[in-house]
Image (cartoon, rainbow, N blue to C red):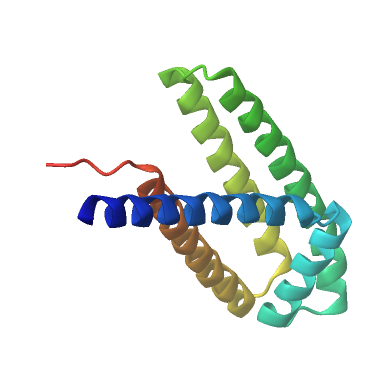
Length: 152
């Protein structure tokens, strides 16, 4: 009798898990992605709210945001292709990627420094730090979800 109850409980829990995963996949497919222009507009408006940008600053920052978005999309596509080939990166490739990333960040900071005043620049740096820590936290949580539990 105990075995029967245990088996029924196991089957029920597995079916609920499978159903929840299917529902999550459907939800991801159903959501439409924003166009690059829409994303750029939202980013610019958030920056305007956070940094109190003037109209002239908004006009100067808009093409920078568009450029960053295009670079990010291209990099995401490149990383997806790399992931599909399942070929691990060499140490030199990792170095090149990190080097390009840091060069891009330096370039972005220089551009923003020309446009923003000192107070806005401080806020922008603080927000950038917050976003980076949140991203790191999310990546860590995602990695922990994917790791199978080791039984002892």
